[in-house]
Image (cartoon, rainbow, N blue to C red):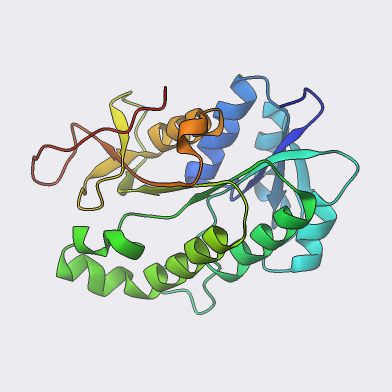
Length: 225
């Protein structure tokens, strides 16, 4: 990665995306973030993030933000909706980001979805699945679109998200039956580590805190080294 290239971040206004922005800027990386409105812009700018106002649901906004003279090394997106949203951004917004990333020839694309997506659906209880199904279907479409895009990708599926400080006990695993909770700051740390790890290339990984598993059981941790 050259010093002149950017990490492009979508979903940075809150949650895991905001934590990723903190993590990347702490590593002195150049970060550009796409925000739908100005509400979170001041905090991100204070971190040193270049903010572009636009909506990932609008492909022309994504093109204006990514297809510039400043090279984009990687795209990271945490965009996702709620089961109650009438228009869920999980697939269309991420589809736009993936398609434009292909045009921009980015080196890596990291998509954050959730446990329960795709072949990890069996990890969820029937009650949880009933609530999350409308969103999980859209997340699965986004994952499949990324896999088919030809981009080098990493898909990270966190468990139930909490807002406490990072514990440092979060791990990645290829085990699709694992379920548990994880703090958003720990997800961000795993995403930032994955950015610099070739071992995560073209992998789908679940992310949990090993001290917050639902039902203790043995599983193989994925090594980033």
